[in-house]
Image 1 (tube, rainbow over the protein chains, first blue to last red):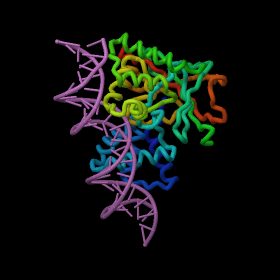
Image 2 (image 1 turned 45 degrees about the horizontal axis):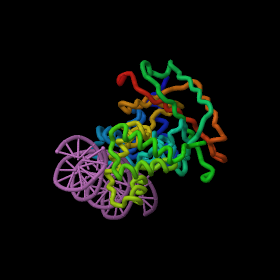
Image 3 (image 1 turned 180 degrees about the vertical axis):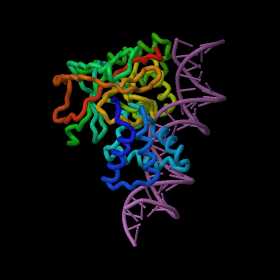
Image 4 (image 1 turned 90 degrees about the vertical axis):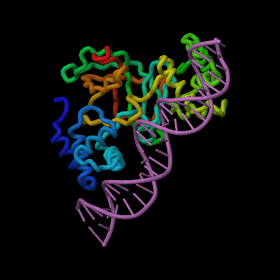
Length: 145
Length: 145
DNA sequence: GTACATGCAAAAAATTTGCAGAGAT
DNA sequence: ATCTCTGCAAATTTTTTGCATGTAC
């Protein structure tokens, strides 16, 4: 069972919205349905398109605002490390990163040992070539505690 | 020695450019000097600003094009996982990611064991709270081999 | 001399904001 | 009735592209 079924995820998101006092508008309801049925890692724009298959008049702003809301409430996560702007890796040494959840800053982290074992039963990566393993530590930096 | 000295990194970048037939224009030379002196994880825009401290008339396009060039040549790396667009994490289970270097697609990966040890001597994260460890596997997917 | 690089300006892509009006509770 | 949410449109932010000119080799 790699992923809980859509109906369950939908119920969870819906309930979490209600619990936090977010109104269940048609737009928001379709968005959380789309999210709970989604596979993979959709972009905001892809989600707009999918919501529009049900509610063609929904605006960009509404979907973006709702996604922000869900992220702020901890019901959804973002996949990128930093903000929208691309950042460049200066340090040529092999290293990893710590990302502060509050200020978004990134620190270089050196690891003396990295040991991971892929669960082949749950992970379909047959024939993939793995060149590099990078670890991101997420948390709160000293200044933001 | 957490990082090789700027002069050495500059020489390396410069030589690598020449070897690949990239011309050493003033703009490109200042950019690689800025890069070799840079700390942390600057955005493209921050690099534009720093190059402009030396060459105030340099254009945005030039810096962006050169950064692309350096990434394409493997002399520089980008810090974000996917493209510019923010992607959302649907899967609420604890899992990790595989990113294909060629097509940019992202797969969910389940790991049965994750064991990392921070090298405290080289890593200044005193007083940081670590909440989550995320592993990214980088390589080439089966379809792109 | 020639191919490559630059500057400019405009376009594109992604996201955010202000505001008036609609709708949920 | 209130306060939130939405749609629209415009503004921002970040990055890319076309094209004429300039320049490193």
